[in-house]
Image 1 (cartoon, rainbow, N blue to C red):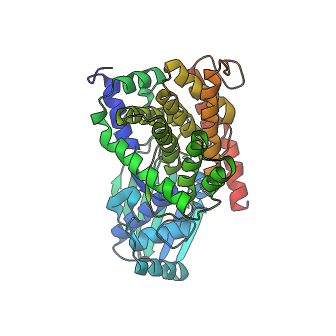
Image 2: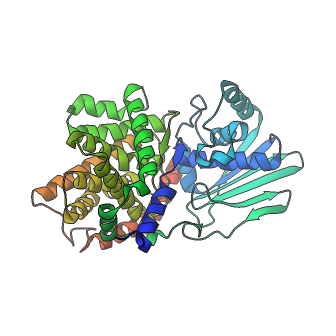
Image 3: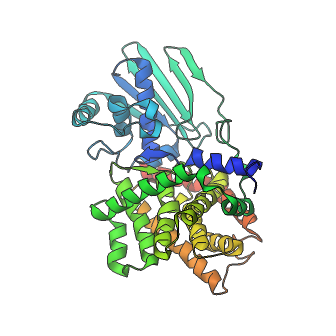
Length: 426
């Protein structure tokens, strides 16, 4: 693929758009971002706060610890963090710099200020509206479709900023993800000038490796990474699963290290990168090979998520795990056929894992997804595969990915609603 090719340029930009740093689980951080922005517009601390959110936002914020809050959890905590200590210009690192006195102020704010949470359904899976009041004044910020996509800023009846809410990404400035397909991704990673993506991928290696190592050092959640190593030993297959899981252990349970996300998710960013990094170490792959493998893994994950959407009842670790499988197959010397059959096999094994929000068990789902990817690769190396017509496996990779997209986006809508009802006690 030539550098002048439309897809080459698009794929480079997609990696730059997607692989950005985030501090903590991205849904509470998006809420903190909206709250910080509203506080700036209001110009003072509010005396009352209203959070309106779609069910999928409530689901993903309810049970996860917000970083830099001394283990505060839930939607009011995320909003309070943004209001007290947020810097909106940092976007998904909005609460990266928080002092001890800030945390004390957050707790005081939560004790003294009414923060109401309401479930809204405007037909959008991803929607956050934060309205902050001070006496007779108010400021409102609305985010829709993805984490940093502010579509409305309003103060005291005056609309300061507004843009149309699309049914897709919600931002016409983002590169068209429909340009992704596996054959072109394979062509891209084999002809890639790695200097075009070196900075973004090296940052992913640095950040996501660091939080994985912290997950194995500390005591986070259910410590899935440690359990895997203690139970199954230290071979490369176990390490690939355990180190990815450990990154999620830390991230879901208050670790204050940033991660590089994929498809709007830190867990997916960890899953798409850490197993590939571990295999590269084991195989002695050089940096060039590793960067190409990471580009393949990340783009494969993004390609799958394009049809599913940012939030769904379909666990995003499955897509990212299949992406990691593609990167692992490439590192092991695999051909295009090895890569696509690894992806299809992995999807046939674990598609259907539900997303019931961000919390400790995400780490175990990551381990299962990476395990399925490794099994999918080893199956094909031994002449075994799941074929078109076997359940949701279609006749080729693109039809299979499209089918998974339909299941995740459309087929699991009702499942998502039932999960939300269970979680909020309806």
